[in-house]
Image (cartoon, rainbow, N blue to C red; front, side):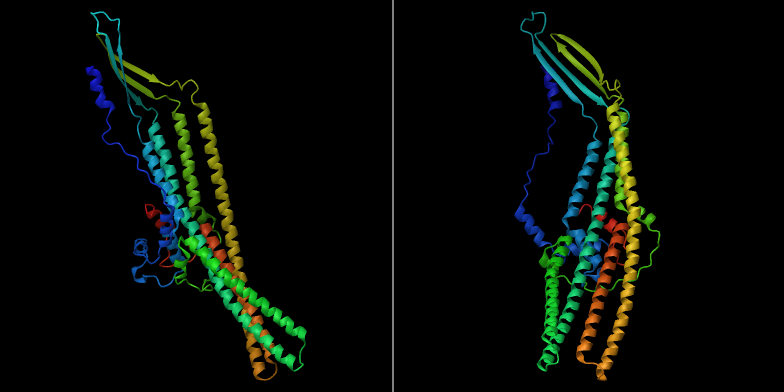
Length: 465
């Protein structure tokens, strides 16, 4: 009885158990939390300072692509998902580092037919102490660490995707504003043409057909302007979604509206090596390959069985018996061949995926660079056409002043100039799209400024945010 009593403290070491705490999801509270996100909050201002943004530029007066990217990195919920997954992967490292736990076995028996010379009771106590062989614990830790680093790099990868989405949304928003300006000017010019035809029709100098045609063109311009203005709210909503903010908050932000401020870029023609070194998804693939390597090492190590040492003591009907047991799985019979073959195949899959990704990145870099160069050439051509059309319009103004042409001809010349300006705005927009695509392919800003943000460093630094 005394042996059993002595074993109880060993089996009931429950002084620091973790208690289950329920945590329900409050949908209403989450909705309120999303609506309350504010880019003018002290928390976000402090985040900017901690991320290296210059204090003298705060509070922000205008929101360009970098400032909006900071906003997305702080408020967008997708990064919270990645951070949670990384913390789970970090916890898995701790789990992998845990050593096997010893176990205690006890038993008690009573023999009703025992004679007076022997005790009717029997008690036993044994401890199973598992011992891992072939560095299995270290290999498990190595595997978990590679997966943890891959999960951490995924935060930066998602951050770059957010920057790309923000840049595209901002470009579309700015292009929409420029289109509205040009369509408004076109509508005014079309209305002038209709007014001129109406006057001429009163003098019998034109036909109803010409007036009807002008009215139809005015209606088309008005419809295009209305559609563009309706699309403005859609584009602003898209930008708000990419920032992780509510639409009312974005409406109050002074967003940069100049869509024609892009500098002419002179880039190195060979960008493949730079893309390979910068791409986060390629580094993630390397970590996953390293994890597959560790998995294979672990399966190979499992060919050698773990050993369990079992010292024990028994009191059997008056006799005291000491024992020492030794056990291990008979894995040496099949040498874990099936699991090793599976791990080998998985490593080959990771290697093939890495090679395919590297090839795609190199190809994408070349295509994105070529598209950017093409967009730059188109823009230069449109600039030259604009200069020529501006010169023609100036000449038409002089001829009108000299009485050589009437106002209708000048208005049509202005319409031609407006059409050229719309083509130029489209060329600017397409160039910005190409720029954003190349930046996303290289995962590196093309135009470096003193305030350019380091996406990878900031996103990983704030992994615990």
